[in-house]
Length: 499
Image (cartoon, rainbow, N blue to C red; front, side):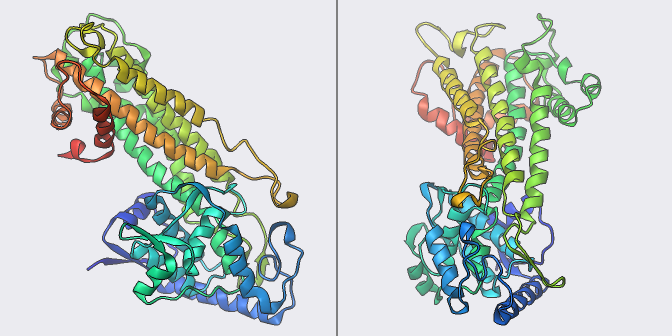
């Protein structure tokens, strides 16, 4: 039986939200959240019934049509029309694990009781979430302001029983899946379509996923860097506490300590060195990866605040008797840090590729391209090319999206964040960095074989042995493409790091 987690507008961490998507958990609304939702909906129904005020998005058109009043008998149709007309997503599909995050984050945002959504609407989002009914959503279409309109419209289509969803590995019409469960599409009331479409849940779902992966990348990148350092016969002094503490940067101090711990007990690191210092890609690991760590933590703080926020418009304040049309849907807070996080992760990949390059160089008593009989064998020559190609693509992907804006809705929406483009670019950078690290892992584990009979630390020995069980030592040239792709999967997974 699944455990039940109740949403009661308590703050959730990124780790807790990710755990809800991965664990054996059923998510339901708590009594406090239900009370807030019902109170807000009743207030809004009363406002509509009184018909005394013109309120944006409730009895008006949308965007530049904000001054066009819609009659009371058309308010529900207005919301359905909004959903259908805004479902303009194109391009590649959003990964299902990120769409699942969109479902839970949308439910969280609407459950605060400032949006006017029906209880039934929010419960339908959670029903989809709990039963792995994943709407088909597309990556292109959002400007990152006015909410993530196009991608969230595809979520809303599923709520009203239209569009397509994935269920049990198959893409089906939502109506057909509803029949399987004995459901009807939700009949939207006033403002509900807008509440579903407004909000930053496309950007924040990507942000949640990518921050979680960024922390994973950081931890694994350090372990791979330590193996590379051993393969290169590098020095340990740059990781000492004294030199890093006087720089007074939190991430740098953290990296120095982790590297020191990883290398504890190594015979290779303890042997006398013939060289006075190492290249920057080894020696400056605390400074470079430490800066990335600090950036990841900044991004994590912003995303955590965002996923616990109300980001639709207009917002309803029942106790104050106010319905305020403002701009909480604007994605600028996310757009900036998604661009920043992409840069921080690209740098982890960039310095990783440099270590692969140095290990190939035929110095420090290593054979050229890390293979016996270089010349007859090309060894790892071209795997470094592959890493360099991906690093170059990351540089292109790190051109910031957040500095761009294009007018929309006849100039009413005249500054947008482009945070959705920042989000999808960041996701690609995440995947690229995993591959770059996978390539470095192939180089690092190859290099360290040439340090025998000296042994590295026990912690690193275990990781190397786990990796070697999947990708054997390269004695002579063989087809490497499949092994490089596999190395990415090994780095992303948990098995080689824990077993």
